[in-house]
Each structure stands twice: as C-alpha cells, then as structure tokens.
Length: 291
Image (tube, rainbow, N blue to C red):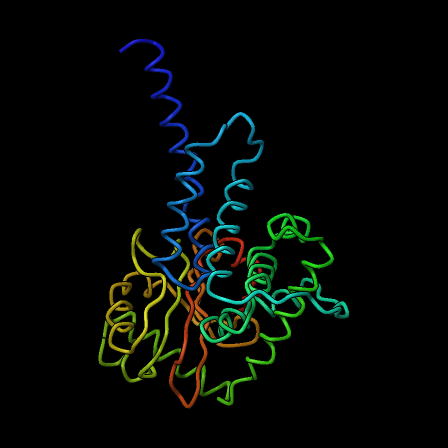
C-alpha cells in the first residue's frame, strides 16, 4: 500500500468516525421532525452520503453542517407530503422565555404523535429545532431559507397549535402518580401483565435514539408491543425514581448526580395513553425535574 492510498484510507476513517459521533443526534432530530424511525434512518443515511462526497475543507462546523443537511432533507420530505401555504400571516410575538420554552417542550413531548400532523412543514421544523433542540432562530432561518423574524413567527404559530391540542389532562395528579408508580413497579419486575393493566390499548411510546439500542424502533404502538419493549429495560427501570417533571408525575434515572434519562407520561382515565423516553442532553436540559 503506497503513501497516497494510506492517506486516503486514513481520511475515510476519520470522516466516518466524525459522522458516527453526530449520528444519534441527527437521528433524534430527524425522528422528532418526521415521527418515523424508518424515515429518520433514511434521512441520516442520505446525510452520510452527502457528507462523504463533500469537500470537508470548506466545512467549518461539521455538527452544524450535518444538522442543516438533515433538517433540510426532512423539510423536503414534509413538503412532498403536505401542501405549503402561500404566505405566512403576521402574528404577535408570544414572548416565550426559558420557562415558556421548557413548558412547550413538555407539551410537545406528551402530544407529539397527535400534534405533528397538524403543523405545516416549516412550522414543524421551526418548533422542533427551537423548542426541543434549542437552535437559535437565525440558524432555523438559514435552514428554511427565510428571515429570523419569519422563523420566529412559524414557531409561534406552531406553539399555539400545540397548546390548542394539549388541554390539561382530566386525571387527578394523585391518581396519575399512582398510575406512573404502578408502571414503574411493573417495569422493574419485567411484569408484562401488570404493564398491560396500566397501558391504554393504543398506547404510544416514543424515545430518543440515545435511550434505545442502535437500530431499535424510536416509536412503538399498542399495549402488548409497548409492554414487551418495556420489559427489556427492567434493569434500567430498577434505577429509576418517581419525580415531578414540569409539574406532572414522571420518572428519572440519575447517574453521577445528573439526570441521564427521563420519562414523561400522558394519563387519561387511569391509563397511560402516551409516554416519551427523553435521553437527548439538549432535551433533558429543557425539563424541570424535581424529586
């Protein structure tokens, strides 16, 4: 093997390692925007192809470049599936600050499956990138090929739709805590029958890529399927504790003094309709978790 071939091989390996470091984050972004594990995997694979072909000397920030590529690819998918509105009407600034962002992140988590289909592609991208991953509006504007002001309006409009679709749960907080506690105890024992007793028949579980094994589905539906998946995490569940997440009962797993994983729940009529496993550091940072 000559020196030139050795050099090329080294560059290829470095390129692959750089991409792999960002892969889970890219997969999380694609999944949260598209709501489909398979589509997210396809998007990340296409991003890898484009990265491998790119002139790396011209890329100053690899993470930002890859995020832009993935987000634009997601936007293309959404635009093919949804009709793009002709123009964006003016809207007042909703004045969202850090506390409001954390609240919206929690609402988005609990209503993810239902709400996402109600948003236009740009609204979905703006809300997910800003309220879930903390991207500034100038970066979002670059992805959407618009101005920061328009990107902010898109997120504001999406935020309003999320609020409209996430009325407070009618379950009593104490009853909800009992349901979440029963879920935790069943998960710790790997007891599928007990899990079925607290899961709604059409329950949906979503998860960040960091929370599941590589290649595992980020979204699963149906009580039996969700219960079987949950049983596989009995060892991790034994380390989890009941907490309050943005004012609602939830679960958290701490290690080294930091929360490494959190689970938020949407409970109706003493049954869990949706729960979301949050392990992405940027999403965890937006949650207010109290013992």
